[in-house]
Image (tube, rainbow over all chains, first blue to last red):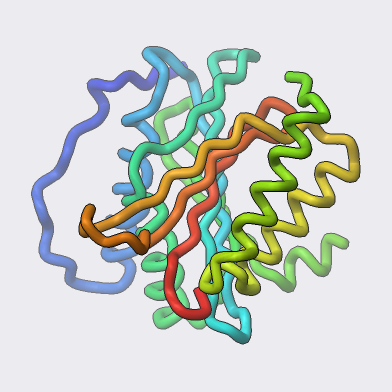
Length: 131
Length: 87
């Protein structure tokens, strides 16, 4: 089991973005680091779900977030600091939509026990199919 | 966490206040408002509400966005709305 600590928070230098996949990866990396900023001293994994409500006729939108850290069976909730993460969610959506045409309205970022970071995107059709 | 009737009234009042912001009374906000109303009707504990008005220019009376932090059954959530026409 890998325990993540705040020393994992390494700000990488600005990297010239070269392609859509790399741009998306970098946004997710910044979100990952925003999660680490509010992480407890010790945790084994974390789950952060972002919602992006959009597509309304009046052009309005909102971004929501819910963050949970796990240390074994123990849950610790946290809130993200600042608005940077919330600014990035619509940007990630726009980049992915222009690249693949996908129009998700929520995604979850997982920091797994083995140290990997994975994401799962939720599409409106998927929600309808799941009832 | 137990939310008192007073806190529930406070939250309902809060929703009313936001309805008076012409630019916040929009579809995205309405959707969230309906979610909160449904939670309250379901007997969920909704409370610990903190609202942050965000301004790029601190002298601007009109906030650029607002971030709401709140809890449902002890689980904290964040919601951010931009203060823009229609949004």
